[in-house]
Image (cartoon, rainbow, N blue to C red):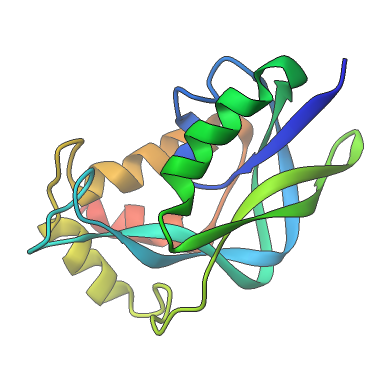
Length: 168
């Protein structure tokens, strides 16, 4: 059965759109997580936007690849393009490395940004603490990331450092 593959690296790892599909850990070389986007509704507001993850060049990123049956490809593609694109990201095809070998997957990559992507942990932490949107707080956003990664043994130094700071 032909399939489409979707690489998820942030909150999309636990998203209901992909939750019913088989997932496995995979590595995307050449990209890393960075807090280069803002949520002004789901996790934050116009006055206090929540920093959210994107993919930027450099390093590597461990995430999940989801196996989407070809019969459901258009439905999933439409839902994810609407959620992930938002003018800040572009969908590309990227080669991820899963335990079975290379997998070509859809990957949403961030467009160039002026932000530092979270290099100033104190500033990102303050913005996460101030954010509160219709889905939850900035701290809850980071918690969802941690809870999506933990069952698969995925670790990310930036996410872990912020989560540790937010638990104080």
